[in-house]
Image 1 (cartoon, rainbow, N blue to C red):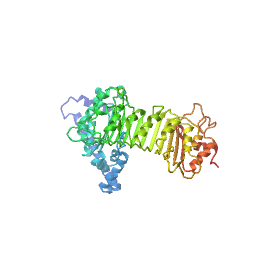
Image 2 (cartoon, helix red, strand yellow):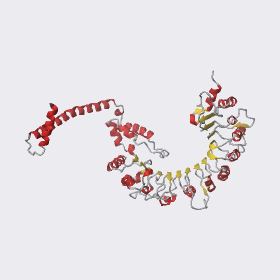
Image 3 (cartoon, helix red, strand yellow):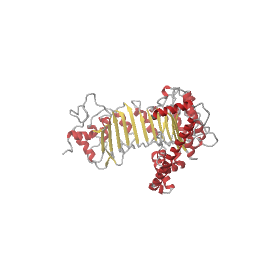
Image 4 (cartoon, rainbow, N blue to C red):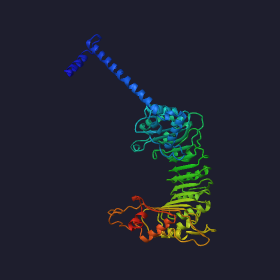
Length: 532
């Protein structure tokens, strides 16, 4: 009955839609229904408002932070935010989370939200994540509001165009422009406040970033990662804010350094990839305060003659380079303390020996990887750096000769350290792809008493990492029938010698990475050593 009546009323309304006489019964009925609905809404709103007020009052009475002075609460919030989104100079090579921590704080209650929204310190980091759609005016307004809340504080800005879909579109297409172009005026308006800039966008848009006024730049950390590696020639790429920029930390890829309008005098930390080798050598001359340099994937130039001049830098303390060790022929680094080198030549020892002798540096830490040189070349080279305290070798095949020589030279004369092999070595790390003879490990630190006038090398830690996968069908470590493959377990006599080394205070570990197990501990269990 009620359903029939409602259908009749609806039909009556449709019949009277063209009727302009307000006294018509259908219009009067519709007006009465509207008033009833408004009255019902108001009746519901009042209890809801009262409930909200009572909840707010309850939260205020039970909120411990609400009883503290607002200055103290701000310091507590700042402590939480600074721990989750640190402003350390070395934190910048990774994007922050999409939802910053101050948004989480603002969701707790209106009091916390008011504090977070009104304190500029919480809004000085502006991460911009760009998706596969045009940037709308509301999104620009959202970022602009966050910038406005930061007051006049220096800004840390991330602008990142996702890579997963860029492989199927043109980075210079209308879609890409519709994503980035709306943000350029907003970013340029606060370019004088940039303290840190991470830009992972096409180089054509990187060239559009610039200061809109004559104010100087306070940019200290700059990361430029153009994502159109093959769309534009490297020599055509430019980065110019309109005024010289003096960063302390610079990470750059796929640029000619001379096309960056930078002042190099303050640069202390440089990370470069896909750069020409000549540019990298020139960098050591341009940056008189450079402390750390990390180079990877260097490119050849068109010239057949490389390194037409030799550069001496007296400040660099840490140098990392993957392959291209021929660059050392153009450098002298007397202050070098850490050297990390991926090697491409079999005779790497001969390539680096001249550099070490010429520089006269006191290396304290060194790591070398990917070489097929023999033990004797490696030993001869290490004799040239007696100051070394930490040595790391990766993917370099070393045999019994090298490890035994370390053991044979465990004791050095107190008055003549320079003629001994690594007299100050404290930490030795080795990573390889297959097992080797474990007895040579035990020979590294013999358990004997020193002779008069000699002291033991202070080798505190010996770490081996084996990244060897088991053959298909081989039993899982610890299962019945294991060990099947030679090397998966240490023989009892060698194991007892290793345990003596450990008891003497040396941190000796042999880790099988793929199985995340300590071969020494597994071998103890296998031989039932230390088991009642």
